Image (cartoon, rainbow, N blue to C red; front, side):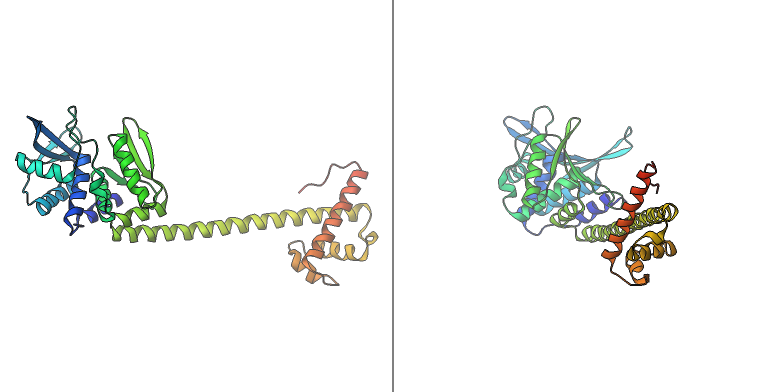
Length: 321
């Protein structure tokens, strides 16, 4: 099973003890998967249709616990998609009305029979917001495998639903974004820390622990890679500088002789030629009269200037590294 599937399976087993939270989660499932039929100005039937077995099971459980309704469950094979469509039906108009009023859903649209939004009263408590987001993810959400990338999304059929979810997620200090994808609107998170927060909000501790372990390993690898890259760059820089210094000193020796240099410059020049791989600190310690790193650096720069002047005098366009 995928990481996303494991998260949904864990959320399936989370049943809130408070009835208002049960209603909030059911309201979310109905908003994303629910359909209603109306007649004579009142609701006649209420259905939830989903290809996700976890959503069907959770919906049935919530209807039983919150309303003591034993809804009808039916399945239909979709030959084209090679999947199963689960339908939970409330055919008693009184039961359908009870659920619809408690869930505080807008009246269904004539074209689709679906609901457009839900009253803010359903999510006025923090615990109910958590339950609502849990239901939304179960109904229309997915996650990438965090070992490969960080991506969390919930697909909405309207911008109104997307903005509702975005607001609820932002209430928990998540930086949720909304993007239009064809005819759908997608609410998404792209950072590991944000997704971890979302798992915590939805109350999926097992998935959260697994994600955090993956994040720790990734950060350790990235930290090691950064250090290795930094050290490699520093080594390359040091080697390139040493090659240039040896070249400058050799040119000075060829054109004027090292014995023509001052005592300090001659000392550093001969030491560098003898120890081409030594660091500046090591060079300073190896000299006849040891000096510090800054002193070594200063003298090597001075030798570089002398070499450049000699090249200019001889019509040479600088040295090569």
